Image (cartoon, rainbow, N blue to C red):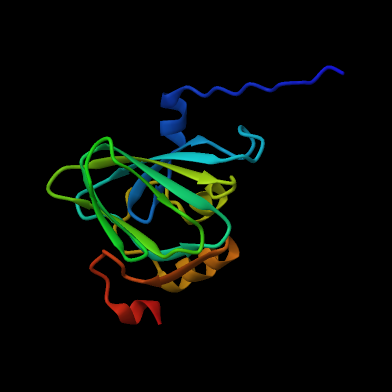
Length: 165
């Protein structure tokens, strides 16, 4: 019996043109559910200094971080990692985590989430232009819950806890 193999390729410049700003971070989708037969999603994030994510929990995906450039602090459960280029970290589903770019330079990360599908959340919350205001936390929590993610606190970001109540 013959099998059919689908091979997908996308030129980086094309993906970069479509990249949304997700929570203040430019997020290029490098591989989606459609391209990986649902196996994983791959993202490249460009984080301005101090940018990152609030403390959150994925209930549907495991997440792996790989630092390409810059310095990033990653909080996963009770473990705080000061990551530099070449560092990778595995964050299993159902474990709270947060991350933030450190210092005065931009950081770049690869994020691998498996199984795939997280890109739908990124596209729904993403903006076409760099944000000029913090995200609407009430909307973020509602949309995140739709994709199996709980936003639970500021984590490593300088956001007052009352925004998460």
